[in-house]
Structure formats: structure tokens, C-alpha cells
Length: 96
Image (cartoon, rainbow, N blue to C red):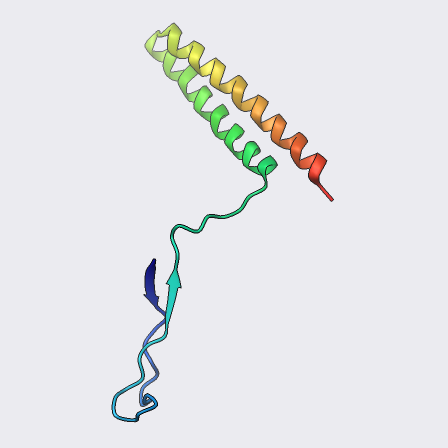
């Protein structure tokens, strides 16, 4: 966990014992806390990323003349489209 100061105490503000200035307030941030996301939305995002990765592999495969890389790109692109569509269906099913 990290501690991030919110800023200095206002000038002239004293602590409860009146001998030293008040300490700055702090926020505690937990970097291990994850953002909860519905699986349909997560699938859609991951699908878009896979599609883009597949298109990039295909372009590199075309430019370098590598049929294996081009084929791997096609597979990634199709897998990304499939995952994106699956995420859309999940989202539609769970929508209120």
C-alpha cells in the first residue's frame, strides 16, 4: 500500500497539543485492489485487443513474406471477433 499526502496543513493550524503544527492528511491507496468488470464487457475489450493484434501480425507477415506469421494473425483476428461477439451476447443476456 502506498501513502499519498493530500497536501500540507493550512498555515497556522496547530495540532491538538498546540506545540507543533498539524500533520498533513494522507490517503491510503491499495495498488492490489482490482476493478471489477462484468465478464461480457471484459470479453469485448479482450476481443478488440486480439483483433488488433491479429491485424498487426497479418500486416507484418505480408511485409516480411512470412506465411506462418500471416496465418497466426488470421487466427488471432478470428479469435478476437469470436470473443468480442461472445462478450456482446453475455452483455445482452445479463442486461437489466
